[in-house]
Amino acid sequence: MFGWLLVEKDDDDGRRDSGIDMFKPYSLQYVLYHMVEMCENVHTVRLHLHCDVPYALPWKLRIGTLRELEVYMRVDDEFLERVFEAAGNKLEGLVLHSTGISTRGFERIRYAAPGLKKLILSQAPRSRHSVYRPTMDSYAIAPFLESHPQLTEFHVTPLPRLRPSDLQSLSHTLQSLTLTLSTETHLTVRSITTVILPPLTRLQSLKLVGNTDPAAVYMSDGVVSEQEVLEIPTGTSGAFRRLVLSQLDLYREEGYKEFYGRGMPWAVDAFMGRWKTRWKVELVIEG
Figure 1: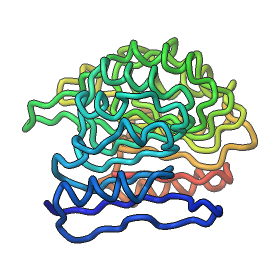
Figure 2: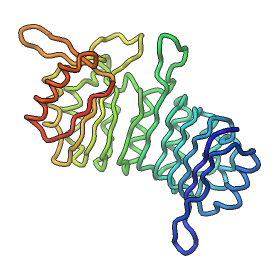
Figure 3: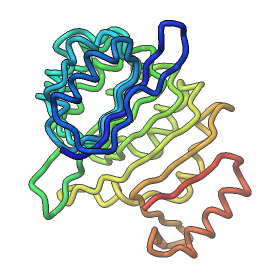
């Protein structure tokens, strides 16, 4: 088995120990030994193991002390069932970089980790060459937000068909947010600017993601108006520092619509110049 596991823990005298940092193949028994015997006070676990080892780790013994869990391997509902066999009452950060969880798995997070402040779930996007589809229902978002008023970071992507009403309970303490645009449910740049952002007075960073599902009904889920983007900071407070546009093309209207995007860097550079003359907020345009 190849990969590495990084665990951070505090010694009894308060000093921080890097714990385990493994770059060589180890047996399951070796990993289990170090998790159980050496990391009794573990508070952070980051797993870069591309194998089944994490499923067999004794989570029930350690989830009660964890404050942050980050996993890079593909995980599913079964993984969450194992992790949250016991309650993670001290867990403040959960980062899953490649998930295939359903609504059932998301509900497991909601009930087992009531103290979460940071949630980052990156669902594998659907493509024309893949049968995989994110299976989490957007209706699960509102109950989660209502039960986690302390959230400071909320990133669940892609999550198409999310409605503005699903986001009414976004925490006023939120500092970082990612949303997937959906014309079908009226979660557009304009509704985000006028409805979603004004109550978020502590928001520092916003990322807007285009809906790249090949079955998407509306082209506008992947194309946004330059003028509407320029107006986004008007819905924010003085704390706002960064806007990221991901997988989105733009257009400008001058009697007609002129479309441009990531394949036309000269047009993007011109827009960036217009942005900088108007706002001190950082703008990032990703492919």
